[in-house]
Amino acid sequence: MPGTLNLFELLGGLALSLSIGALGHRRGALSGSGFWGALITGTLIFGFGGWEWGVLLIAFFLSSSALSFYRSPDKQGLAEKFAKGHRRDLGQALANGGLAALLAVLSWWRPHPLWFFGCAGAMAAVNADTWATELGVLSPSPPRLVTTGRRVEVGASGGVTRLGTGASLAGALLIGLLAGAGALVLRQGWTVAVGALLAAAVGGLTGSLIDSLLGATVQAIYWCDMCGKETERRVHRCGTETRLLRGWRWLGNDWVNVIASAVGALVAAGIGLIVL
Image 1 (tube, rainbow, N blue to C red):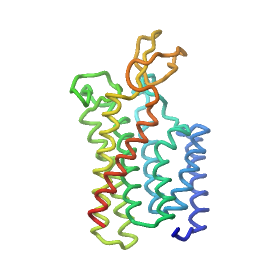
Image 2 (image 1 turned 90 degrees about the vertical axis):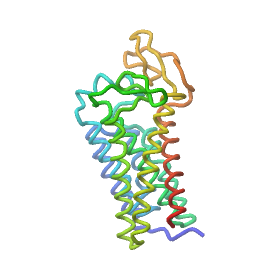
Image 3 (image 1 turned 135 degrees about the vertical axis):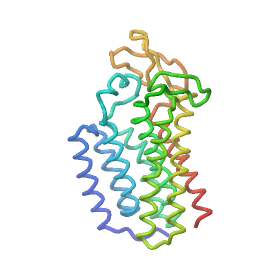
Image 4 (image 1 turned 30 degrees about the vertical axis):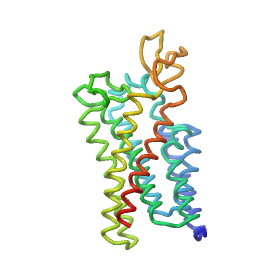
């Protein structure tokens, strides 16, 4: 049977998501459609999951937005490679927070603590991937393809560095620490708290690795004949329509993020099965 819907948390989630979304839009972290995506996901996560769920989303949004602006002049030359810039649109908002929102609704429909483990894993995965991307491109050592170890250009899909891997783990641990703290505040015990931390860390790191594997193998990568450069964009920054170079045309960056977050959720839920 569905659980009790806390109207206060639902309205509070709406108000908080509205405030954060407006701030993100004003600061350039969200596009117009991204604002609505943040409002929808934030309201659902807070309203149906509760504050301990919402804190994970806030941590992801604030930390990833801050890192996207960190040393932004050094990243300007890489913007042409990525499908989208630092301003998140509706697709990115749903790709990053949509699964957590769905799990929050399911947790209300069929209450079980395992849903929270899944949410922690999903948010840890997207946070780990974002931290790896934003900091990994600043690595002094060249990235290597995760599948073969071959050196690739900075910003190339599937390229990894030690700095990026370390940042990925740190991003997953942040979500894990908050998930564990939430369990302690709710008096669920140290076993659940440590389990939530471990589940988020392992799930997040695994999801980030899957993101890199997909980027190196089947993610759609295009070629701009005008500029002679690879990109994730169907229309390059120069305005030229690109042609598919490799990968599956339908598997863009947003879908890669969805798959990575799903893997993170499944891994974390699996650990939750052992802990709970």
